[in-house]
Each structure stands twice: as C-alpha cells, then as structure tokens.
Length: 291
Image (tube, rainbow, N blue to C red; front, top):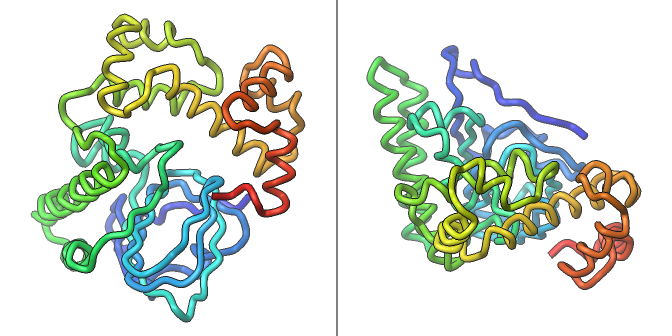
C-alpha cells in the first residue's frame, strides 16, 4: 500500500504544517487506489462531486463538506476532479502536541481517532467561509514566515480546530470538552496504541491509576459510551480493517489481535455486527459493506 509522507521543508524552513488550495494538492491525494499518509488531514470542499471510501465509511463529497483523516487511515477517492475545489490543512503527528504543549491535544478532538462516528461534517456557507478565510490567513503567514509568525499560526490554528470540534460534537451529540477530562483523553490514546494487544479494562484502569468505576464515569461523560463499549469499538474497527484491506484469514487475524481462538473472534464480531467475518469480507469485496 502506498504511503505519502509529510514534506517538512516545502517552504525552505522546517514546518510540520502545510496549508493550501486544490491547485496545490499533488494529484496523488485523490487516487482511487488504496493509500494512506503519515499525517493528519483536514480537507475543506467548497465544491465537490463524488465520494470517498475512508476506513469502511463511504462519504459523499458535496459543497461545504469537511473531511477529517487521522494518520494511516486507509482511503480511496472517487471524484470528478473537474468539479472539485478545496482547501487543505495537513500536520504531522507530533505537531499538535508540541505546538500546543499538550501531548493529548489530537486525542481531545472528537473527529480524530473516532471509530464509530462519520468522519465528515457538512456546514452552512457562513461557517465554511469563516473557516476558509482563517485558512487563507494561515497560508499567508506561512508563505511570509517571520520571527513572530509562529504565534499567529498557533492562534489561528487553535481557532479552526476548536471551532470544528465544537461543531462536530454538537452535530454528532458528543462532548466538546477539551480541558477537564484528561482521563478520557489518556484512555483514548492508550486504546489507539495498545488495543490490538490488550482489551482488559483493569489493565487500562491500573495504568491510569484509577478504579474501573471512575474510568467508566469519565468515558461515559466524554464519549457517551462505557469503557468496555469503547474498547469493543476500537477492536471491531481493527478487525474490519484487516478483513477489508488484507488477505489474512481468520486464524491470522485472531493471532494478530490476541484472540485465543479464531471462533472467539468470530463470536465477538457476529455479536457486534450481526454477520460473520466471512460475510463481512465478501460484502466488502462486492462493494456493499461500505456505509
């Protein structure tokens, strides 16, 4: 699978952020072959025609559509490129944590590493234009980079991300809180890094230095699910990804995801989805499982 890497020195100074319009996007970002990148992506479509397949989601691209993509999410684009106009905002994995001196910042944003909600937002013209104007200011600051530009870039970027987080959370009935529930954000980070190997709630509660009850309370408040349900969401996502994008059989997937037996994985998958892994893979290959 092709991986596109972030270009750090595009502006003759090392920046871990890139901003531009459709004309600046290399052709490969809208490829129909499965690919991924090693950075975060926000894509703002002022004009769109077609759809995106993003980790088992099918997202229709129309005017005022904003797409949120986390590093290494697999995707395929099916766009009429003659009827597309967009702006993009890219940054590397370490950028947000270092830029805002907060290693959990990317995990505080509801649209990154979300395994169940749609990874897009359709907004009204007024809000879209407000965001685009801010992006244009960011781009201007980067292209005329000066000694104090970092402060302006930080302020404008924070404005865009927090405004989007509020809008996304409101639309999908989630919490927009980013400051007062660090346990929930640390749990999300741990799941992203460890869920393929460990699914035991006690492990995460112990690692966070809290009880299961406290962990559940924090997760329920922030993500509207229990800690156990969130673990299931993350591991189900990994199973679907392996079924969709690899040729691994069920025994191999069970081994990779630390299920003791293949039938345990099959039973878990069917309880969560109502169909077997084999049926899911067949449906995906026939083009009918992406929603």
